[in-house]
Picture 1 (cartoon, rainbow, N blue to C red):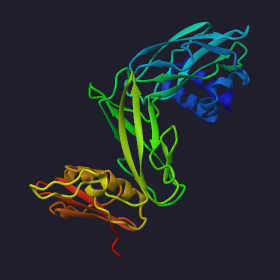
Picture 2 (picture 1 turned 90 degrees about the horizontal axis):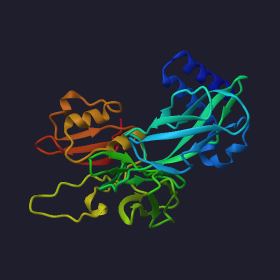
Picture 3 (picture 1 turned 90 degrees about the vertical axis):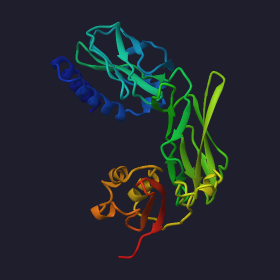
Picture 4 (picture 1 turned 45 degrees about the horizontal axis):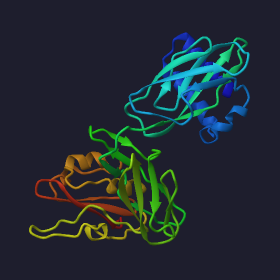
Length: 336
């Protein structure tokens, strides 16, 4: 199947079919050989590894929107008649060369997650044998520091020991662009309470026992650092701040800012959507957020409190006089 995918992809290139077909098929190959991602150094021992990426070096750092020059040679006295470089999505495919050594230019997309990305040279010999190189990794990183870190989920909630959830870290830079930094080599994770929740180097959090804690993501570069704390808990906490009367103040700690209703376990989609509610969202934005999950009656739009029904729990959202979200909270679903 591996050889068939390579040959079909190369045929698409020769016949002028769009690159996306080639990338799709090569991506399938890379998925089938996922060990390349974790043991790419030893992959030279695999069969038909007759190509070699001599430049850039493994683990070279590049920036988004940079044009990367890639040089491919043959590691054996074999005539290679087709060769291309395949980059992990969204880098994609280079042009097709008909001999080696060959040089390729790969444009690193501006919209790309920071961190390691695979590059592999793949091709065919004059006799039709499929050949490839050892996979190398390039480290895509912004050259500057982010001005702000945020998490896709501002809090993580667990219900059962052994559950896992990733921390998805986003970085906003001075030019206003936002990048996924979850797997950035500049980012490190730690837990202040590993007996409750531990975190792996890739940001995956594992729940061990009831309680709460903080997962800290620290981005370091050139002697500077910026941190993000993500609360973890074995209870549901609606993160949206409660409405505070004019002239009053409230502590900014998550526990004091939030409603603490403990719902029963319910429909996951409702939980996820309710956690995505943001203060200041309009009723139209909220309707769009829940559109694929919950049917919102038209007569509910004039109300200042919405109850979005779930299977075993509901999401209740309160609005101000201007129709903007004040807070959200989980409540047990009403019996049918």
